[in-house]
Length: 204
Image 1: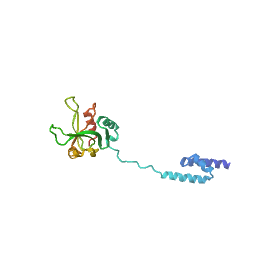
Image 2: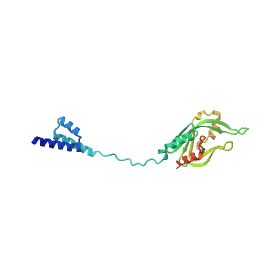
Image 3: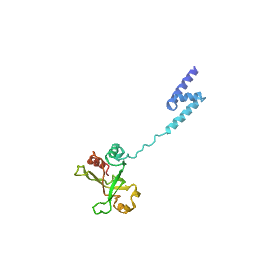
Image 4: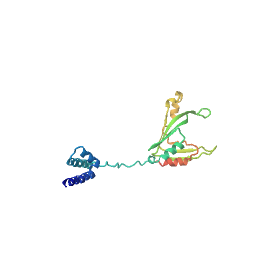
């Protein structure tokens, strides 16, 4: 009668070990591998202690990004569609667009005309300090469209070496790299007031 009692006791011990540290499959594996009951108890107890030492990693408590751009990809799609440019990019602090611009420069000739060159220009509109000056829908034959913004604006000529040597001095004297305001080009079918309103959501 002692053997069944011992077996029953071993069963309860194994069940206790399994619940606390080792699975039943692990206990069976240890016993079949030649470990004694006492060795299995000690092995699983050690595993339990190791598990107790494992702590969850500290949560990242840094504040989430507050820029509306971080969560609003619809604006990125909107501005790429609305702004008349070869390429438009948005980031957390600025709007950038690349466009081919035709620029008048130098002195007027006898007919009142200036020299004109068309080149690719990168325009960066920073959100900090941005403000709206004027919006105007196009009125055919009467009024051109306008979307004039004021703020921290940078313009960069992408291929400065393409300017003919005879025009370089006059051109770069008139080419504004940091204008106080900019008339942002936009495509037909878009309301400049809507573009300005969505852009001003990013102003700081």
